Length: 182
Length: 184
Image (tube, rainbow over all chains, first blue to last red; front, top):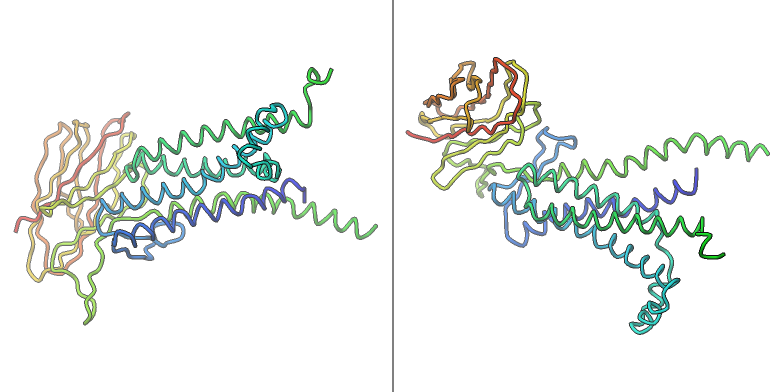
């Protein structure tokens, strides 16, 4: 098995688990906090034939929206964190001002730990796009707040752009620009 | 040498499976999240002596997926009027039907329901509903709306089918709204 495939499998497990956990915990936390009665049923309606029922349509709408938001945050925050970290790390190579600023904030150890790769960012970004797709679908069907879908779209576009930039940096490491050296 | 060959063979065999697993890691969370989306349904009221249903008319959406009937919603307002909405997608001239609602009369007496429904614009389609194999007209092709009164026998369950019959191809989506009100 190729190394790339092994690492892709390893890197995609955490966001997959977080995506499900974010949605499920979102539903249960909101229900518990606001005291909404919920029921778990086994009607044959979906692939897993397990549904979560609420009595009121407004409650369903609210719980679904908040759980979508929690799922989005759970995936978006680590993705953006990794992109920012990589961007700062790469910036230190070309810009001495960045090193000075990082030293000033005592963040050198955090930034220089190069454990974030393009593959990791790409996998997290793919999960963020998946989450956004689901939220947009919900918003279009009137099951979730529209602003959550808009926030998701903006975050996905930004992280997509960030992932692309990281890819460019990784590529320039392998194939450096000849003008830089000669 | 033999060991190396064996390792190479296993690598070759395992790789497609690994790709499959990678795809599943993306597919399974997506399906799970879709399935976790909460649904509105009248919950059972439990008391300490056992299960008891409130003596009222209970209406639940059947939902499910359909090529023509999409984005189904069922809401109940404070006055007890149920509003069922769906989007009828563009379609070829034909007759389409789908079970949309389950109505249960939990009372020990007959209950009369007033049901009427229409699209916002005339659609040149016949829209009707079927309850217990009997057809009830809701909207005629020119947009005229007919109000139907349905008598529900005590402790009986009814499945309402929505039927749309178009005589020519419909090239646009239209929103259909059905109102259900208890009158007696």
